[in-house]
Length: 420
Image 1 (spheres, rainbow, N blue to C red):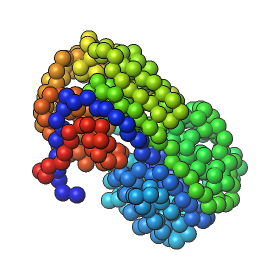
Image 2 (cartoon, rainbow, N blue to C red):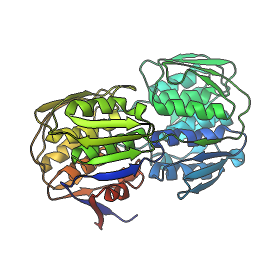
Image 3 (tube, helix red, strand yellow):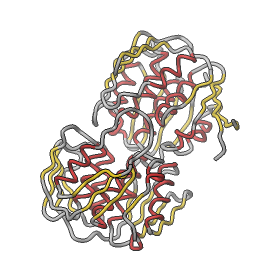
């Protein structure tokens, strides 16, 4: 796509109904997992986002047949033609979750050579727990010329993660599915997409128990069979739409979501003075009065998600009082606040904590998205601001949000693209 900027004319309450797409964080784990199957697999409700398109290119490069329709949101993956176990650095630099191909290819081929992952620059994102897990299962792991290389016959073992790691949990889970014997993952991540991956693997004949708790037990199997599976709704897109509704003092109902996944955000919005009600697979966000300042601390699930910290801290820029936002997962997730200072935001950043003094008005200004969720935060800021906000590098947003502009326009927002 040619370079463009996103223009938002703000200070308009969002109203109406919208629907959530399939989960980005789930999709980028399930697609590599399909490589381990002995038959074709079908995935439904996949989001039309850049990260999914990158994975399609990678799988085809490995020899898999991939049929993907952005209309039906369905992908059929036939891995029987896979004839390679190397994913070049040039491809892996296009997304962070490319590292899941290590666990998947190691299981399928007994060997995997994957370039270091790219993705958003949000600080140090260590890979050591993945490597620790692979080595615990008997793999030889080395780093050569920007590539991570793993090979070996895997044997089930107990793996204790030194810290909770979503990526490490998923990657070692993939590697353990066909390992001989039982693997036990201790101090495992509990995120919804970890559970969804386990459910998908089990639908193919794997034996994964305990996903959603801090201990996951995997009994190795010899074969995985064909499966048709539907991806869960995107937790972070749901939260971003909820925050956008609150930011504009609008009245929006988000359909096709899982309200229990949103409890940490819902609690904070209620604390701010926003009305949040849910039923079955829908959440309604409505205004009550002025927003109050609150304190937010990111934590692993079921705590407040780091991926919603940036949109949430944008919302807090107009709350009455001073909010304190503490980021415990990544060390470079306040870049959007530096951009928002051009819009009148008052934020002071001290190491991993942001002190946000609410202001009555934000004004439109040129700003630049530095990563996926920072881009979403600047969209929230633009929706709140008076005048027109110009967001440069909005391509980051397409990595994780399906047609966000169209969804916002359907709720009454004035959002358009303009060539740069």
